Amino acid sequence: MCGIIGCTGRGEATLETLVDGLRKLDYRGYDSAGVALSGATGVDVVKKAGKLDALVEALSGERERLDGTVGIGHTRWSTHGAPTDANAHPHTDADGRVAVVHNGIIENYQSLRDELADAGYSFVSETDTEVVPHLVARALDGGAEPEAAVREAVSQLEGSYALGVVVAGVDAVFAARRDSPLVLGLGDGANYVASDVPAFREHTDHVVYLEDGEFARVEADSWVVTDADGDPVDHEVHVVEWDPEDTGKSGYEHFMLKEIHEQPRALRQGLQGRVDEMRGEVTLEEFPSLSPSRVHLLACGTSYHAAVYGAHVLHSRGVPAQAFYAHEYASATPPTDDALVVGVSQSGETADTLSAVRAARRRGAETVALTNTVESTMARECDHRLYIRSGPEIGVAATKTFASQLVALNLLALDVAPGGDDREAIAALRDLPGDVQTVLDSSRAAEVAREYADADAYFFIGRGPHYPVALEGALKLKEISYEHAEGFAAGELKHGPLALVTERTPVFATVTGEDQSARKTIGNVKEVEARDAPVVAVTDGRTEVERYADHVLEIPETHPHVAPLLANVQFQLVSYYVANDLGRPIDKPRHLAKSVTVE
Ligand code: M6R
Image 1 (cartoon, protein in one colour):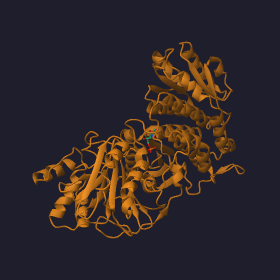
Image 2 (cartoon, helix red, strand yellow; image 1 turned 90 degrees about the horizontal axis):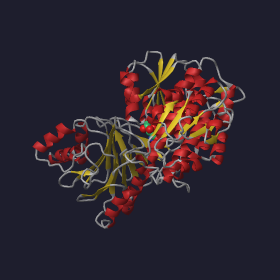
Image 3 (cartoon, helix red, strand yellow; image 1 turned 180 degrees about the vertical axis):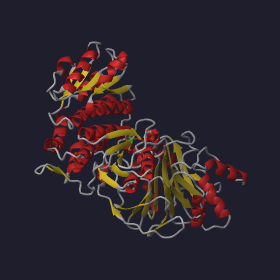
Image 4 (cartoon, helix red, strand yellow; image 1 turned 90 degrees about the vertical axis):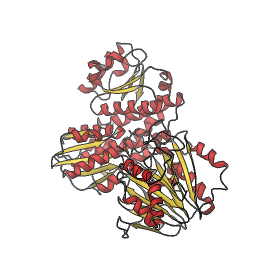
């Protein structure tokens, strides 16, 4: 969603640093962008609706005017008001003394706006954010020093915010957070503020994560974090482990394709030091020994599909488990005291999931953050953390992080299940990175995608642990290709969706093994084949599904819990190639954002 970058100490490179930072954040999804540079006498702002290229073009004639050496920049994903130049951030006061960028939603903005308007402050946008520079201006007008004025403004806000503020004549960026992430980057003679580390990672790997309610003053050579009362807060300085190149495309046409191909490495990282095949054991060293009598998994989108898979695996290992859409959890049966509540979230910042996990905590549940993002809000707020260790994922469409979530959920299930470990499953997990590589090296997905790129709709079916992968296959395809796709439990087709099946709706079926579940899915495949739908079967060769399929996408034989991960790779590739053949902007699908920080 919205992205923030701020810097001080970059001298003549300030504008370039801001624009580069915004480029690094553009994976988050946005529909307008802007920068503000603060100098001795005023703040200069340039902002444009549309993508960053529109902003860069607008900046081309302005470089001389934009000579301030303290700056903030923003990519906006619209909530209050359409994506117009006027609604783009930064927002300023009427005199151009103050500029503000903001992520989140200010819930009391309407009453603040009415109050400010009554006092003569005039507004030029429809945003909630614009109240902030006017509140700062009112405090300055009342005689407050700049930092005190910003603090006074922040103290009047209700809702969620990550704020970056500059005030003319002050060589500092002010920052404040509540319920929206903000991180400081500590460089050599220059310091940074951002909503996410990639924005400044090329300049420094030393970071400080702000906590809710904290306020920071960041100058070129110093930084100080204080609490709401202005008392200094000690912070650990973390060192980011990944390289700046990890956020580049490494020669791939799209981040999504790069990240699909990174899966063997991501999965190896997720397993490293956690499985001991000799002893047939899983050891999650950073994780306590837990024996929950039930597990609730809360998540959204792709992570919800991982949660559905996790519930299946836990259940099959004797631990009652249920997956919930985080945004529906409020109306679900509350967790009992003995429930372990697991927030499944790549970013660890998804507002819906955070809110559900917080509600569970308030009810007394023990909580786990299963996330990719070290020091994310969810990681910090939960009782325990299980990191999936995928490395940074830039494409809006989650790919490698989904695979890593499924591995982490397998490890969790093996760790907490009463029946002890399962050598076959552990061996299959050990072989998984190599098996994924085999699929990547031999997949015929591009050919299949080309054949069906003009289909009316695409259906995905699977049973048991393959069902969530069918859901995920459809989500991936629809989000990046804009084509209609649905995932179904294989047995459900005949209860309604079969009416949609025609010769122009390919059905992608994932079916492995030779047990009763596989036989039943093959029965469902026959049902669609009899209605003239093309069938693409993802299979390990142990089923006879190829007899009813127009195309077969092969995967290696493996443990039944691990096979869906391999099938998923074939589905990822099909989605990618359908979208690519249709010329879609794969890494930045319309209307979507990488990290969804509003409910
Ligand atoms: O960061 P999270 O895993 O909590 O994100 C949840 C969803 O917004 C996310 O999985 C989304 O569905 C994917 N980006 C889609 O590919």
